[in-house]
Amino acid sequence: MKCSIKMLLLALGVAALLVCISPVVASPTEPIANPAYRDLRTDYVRNWYIFSDEITDGVLMPGDTHVETMQNCWTSVSSGTMHNDSRGPYGQGSTNPTYTFPEGSDYPTAPLNYATTYNPTGTQADYWFPQKEDRIGFYMNYSQRDNELKSDWYNMPEFGGTLGAYNAETEGDKNGFSFGWVTNAIKRDPITGLIDTDNSARGGIKMDIYVHNGKFVGDINDASGFGANISNPNLSASNDISEKARDPYNGLFHVPSFDEAADSYTPAANAAMTAWYEYSVGKASKTLSAADLVDIVNSMDIRELESYGITGGASRWDAIFGDKTPAQILANLQYEYQDAFMDRGTYAENSSDGGVIAGLGGMGLEGDPTIDNWADQQVIRIDIDLDSGEFDESIKEIAFYDFGYGAGSGQTNIREIIFGIDRTQTVEHGQIFYDTLEGRVWFPENRIYIAQVVPEPVTMILLGIGGLGLAVKQVRRKK
Image (cartoon, rainbow, N blue to C red; front, side):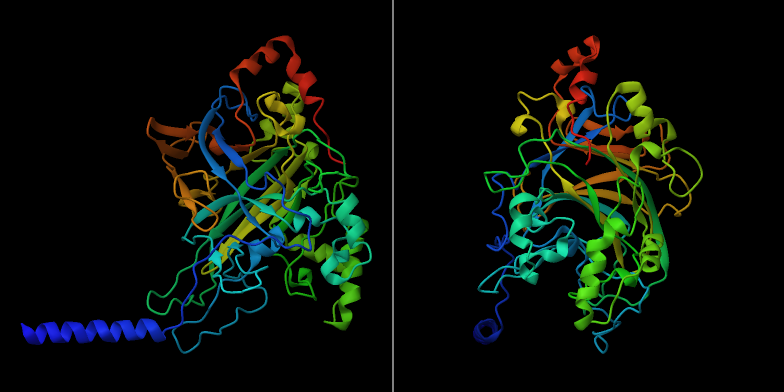
């Protein structure tokens, strides 16, 4: 017994010594705002409400089921940078930890809630979003840098641009909020933690996303300094995009801008991007021609489309539900979906895919839902096709990431809101479900809404007197 006690004390002493001499790994902490950018909004972390389409009309209405609530994360970097940073390390076994996936491969990227991007001490650890095979995860984000950003993004202050201060004061209208999603197929070695180098095809996703913009609030020259409360959605990250979209300055990918007037991706709408690439030739030999722009757009698995030109059919960019396209809904209900995005992405083994829609967050009447009509608020509609057979039923579960609403959750402690999938059900009934304390909630037509406010039943009165059309006409259309 005495020998055992001595051995135990010796073991404890060795362990204590190892703790003392081992490097201390700091825990992730909330990001720190960058003073070079516009100050954080007072509501930079908001509640976002998740609904099922109980009425199955393609529009969030009083009577649809409020299922869950989540809060957004926030970062000081751009929403695109946050989304497509690479997790690493790669390689099969401990002998090859620096393996680089060949050009044209899918990468094991993952959203990163930057705790270290602007941090004078540099001691905090990074906080990565969860990764699980065959899961698609959705999240809302606020980017301090995006709130500074405008179409001529290459003139940002950190690049010494002469228009940086002017843009920050008068044209920072993206508002900072974004909606992102990521599909994972990553497998790590349980011993080394390294990612396998198998990059063969695995599965994909077919999804339509429509955005109803909240009513414009404030002025571009916002005296508060936080930016106008405006919604002007645009694609900020797209999976499987061509290497030609890689920024020669920092190595990250930039998505081309959609020309709303021409309803396509035009060279004119991407003049700023082209100018920045040409300016950066001294740093890396890179130009961007009109032909390059065509190649980039053709490579994208996520596209922005003119919302009222979308129809149902068999082509890749047709709507999942042709009878509930923005044009159909506007004709029948006087409700506008001003923006449309389609994901027809595929993903490979040991990679992550997904996208980001930036420029969200508009709310009506100074954002007070107690006095607003629900139709004035930001609504994101997600239609998911799980029954097409095109992708071999690859998606097994759906998650929404909560950064502060649920007990114990926060910016570096995600609460995973897990939705199940049951493909034995019909699409009309809904194959997506969520289990609550009150029972199982189904999502008819595999449709999910994310909204800024819970529709109040009292607004049903508006439907009886035709007030809905009047209310929605106040909604600001895109520029």
